Image (tube, rainbow, N blue to C red; front, top):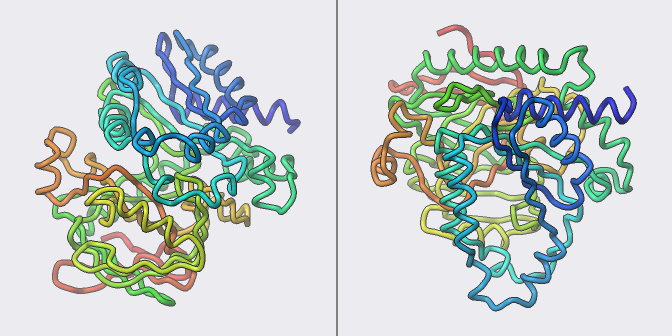
Length: 408
């Protein structure tokens, strides 16, 4: 396909499957200025789908760098009231939210004080999480926007066309009908989700090189996969691509040590590689890394619960992302090549009544509440994954990155 057809297919997938934009719906798109080409295509697709209004919220990392270098320290975590109001209005309207990722300059924030990098408006981020992500009224999705800087990071040269080819493969844009292809994959993931639910595991255990980690689960919690649904019945796909089956573990029940198997980039823009974590009583109590340890520690110090897990995810090696054969240097893609965990906030919808609980009730039930959610890949063909039953027996789930869990 030519570049214009590829862009159209991508935008149609984001609007039709990711956010599933409905007629007369308001849409908010958040993106960097470097993402403008894809933003325009998505806005066009949204209006064709019947959107009432598409609002684009552009940001510029170069401006953010200037702020981090020169602004008063006490201003870095501040925000204006209208920044909250727009999220509240989007939820009240039952709107759709689309965020683009794809770092155009991963080294832009190198050398900046990690403490200043970690200074974010925590109250605003929590409000966004509660109102948009977990409020139940907004259909939302996160997708990546290829750009020359991202291509430079992946290939060592700004070969944008090559990156687009890889993204198209990972996003199944080469399928005769990408929308149908993603619906088929979602059905496969729902089957895996159902098998794990029926198994009733008490914990998930990961064992491999430099890894022996047991992640305890919350009794009565449910596994989830590709799709979610708003209170109005709109089905949407929060992440594109997505190849995972996931849940939120018990905040107090992670024990052992784990090696992160893929480099990753923190929300601050800091690069991290060779990370190893040690857990006791659910908390990260040890951090070492080849690069980026100080940046990770700064994130973990952001609030009292950032050191606890909010997600455990099972991913096989047969994903479209894995078939692309690249380290994308983008968590949205790279988390889909192997099992991963995330430290930070939990997903309340993993408990049957979680969306109706107060924050205190969620914590008492075992969910974690924090201002961060950072995914790190811990899977590889060398890491075995087992479900630990309440009686202590281990049931194989993954071997050699392949799904082996039989029907319970």
